[in-house]
Image 1 (cartoon, rainbow, N blue to C red):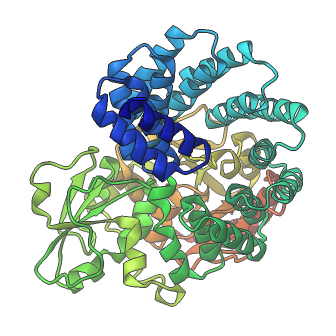
Image 2: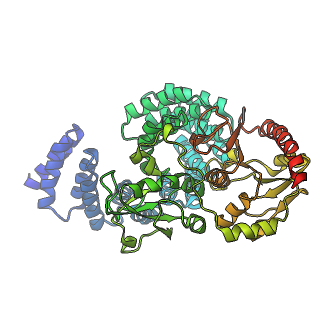
Length: 556
């Protein structure tokens, strides 16, 4: 027996015994003797895979593929390894080749669907999973994976059916049960969602995913203490599970435990719930800022930028020059805002000179590094400047104020993950238009066909500086949870905020006021999706407020 044969035999024997280190050593030596033998490199890659050495496994699989480019196992393992290492485009090309060579392989279509999903190409992902199911219709995992892709597209009814089919085929499928609970929660069926989550946790008590989903449902029901315990279980099982840390942050913040919450909030980039900025500049970690030029990078929504820009003056106080990179529509409004030396529009990439900045920080990480607690809020109000010329323009456009003037906004960003819960149908908002003695102004963009009694001035709005000028001319803003509310609050203008049952963390729990914005009054749903009782309460208060204001209007 040749030395090569001895090494191959030794490697195979140790592999079968579970001695991956020994097998790797044997196959590595064999690869030195037979560098053109694809099987040796392939086996070496399998050993390294099982040892968790992904980069080394990738190198071995890549060599095997180069030697046997049409051998399906080489393609499959290299594609999976590339995908796990974030080499998504490479994984896509390899898997497309696998499907071409094996058009009857359901697993290949499943893998293709996962890659398309990672790339955000949901139509391709859905088609791939449906092709897989044509080949293997009784495979529970395929139905589960199709359900996830449908959920990504907010096709809730179809996703529910996919998860239910997975459970018909495998009633103990904990992942499908957990995913079904996510769909039910998105549909407002929280009691059913909770039942499925508890069953999934009982079936898979060592699964961090099942615990964090249970915590998420409990959070949506306002049961934050129980939610915290579920997230702690998830983190204990998987200390680096970013989504569990993120959900833990949501409950901490909602309970007003801000400093602990901000620390967990930093997991957002890893969880995919916050922007992951390329590391083109050093990140500020809280060190001395004297003489430094700091780039603040806005993230998430317009309202988030308006809410968190209040903390910029502290950076200047510490000796920094501050450049804010923000959404283009906010730049006219934020010109002259305290704490900002220079404003630049977000384009997705930094210029080579990074505007002369020496370090950066995501805007929403400021409270963490500044150790902001409830006692530090709200800070100076108002903190957004008004442009005098625009205010005069909108005074003229709106005309004399003969009635109590109220601005309305009933819908937020349709791309927001919770928009289906936080926006209110206009047909229900019409309830307010019957209040006498009130002039109602639509602040809703984009403009829609409006009912009688609701005045549309949005055609003249160019950006948020115009909206701010309009808000300054209103007696009251009534809105769901949108950037309009942050604008009114930051201007110190009276505003009533209508909140869903599963309200965002920043509005805390069961309060009618906001420590962030003293001029706000909060109206909360008692049951998910039920806006009518909220609007009836708002209408009663508006009738009283407008009635009291009417004599003053007559004296003007």
